[in-house]
Image (cartoon, rainbow, N blue to C red; front, side):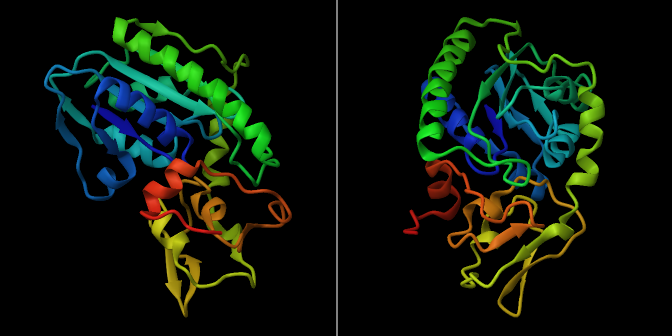
Length: 258
């Protein structure tokens, strides 16, 4: 049994690779939480969480979902995190939110291409391809470790500072939606509404509006917009976008031709 959260496809790609190798069913935490699906039976199988690292910690929806999650008859429990820089306090946070209902036995990390366009320029396609090749090799190693039942903190890239929790404290301010806006390239396709993990995007007068004060800040809307019509303040103007092609096809159902 595998619980995943993904904004632009990095975590989805890693999860899909692990799930295919280990024959795991994938459960989307954003969808499950939206419909109040928090009780499961693992039937003795391993439980794997695949999550991205936001501001050194977990996305808001993952925190909320994990706080309500009840998994019966679990085997070993693993946390696999994806990140552009380094892993942080995500495994610790997951354990705290599970509050003894599940115990995290092992954690891994996989470096993936940067999708946080508001912070920095995403990689070129060539750079992303190189990072993804290394990530697939790391993921294959993780698959073998899970098969072997290995336990412990097996992350190879970890934040070395002592202020991971402090950095995560800024996430609450960061995930305010007021900075999102649409430019005149919008073609009214509603893709942003469809891919929003928290369903805060509503269409008014055929244009997207971020209808709640906060979201997870997964950047799915911004990165998957086919016309790069969504910006975050002034910081994303002129910057590349990034998404994993596997996830684009999954969340939209069809491969869009840009």
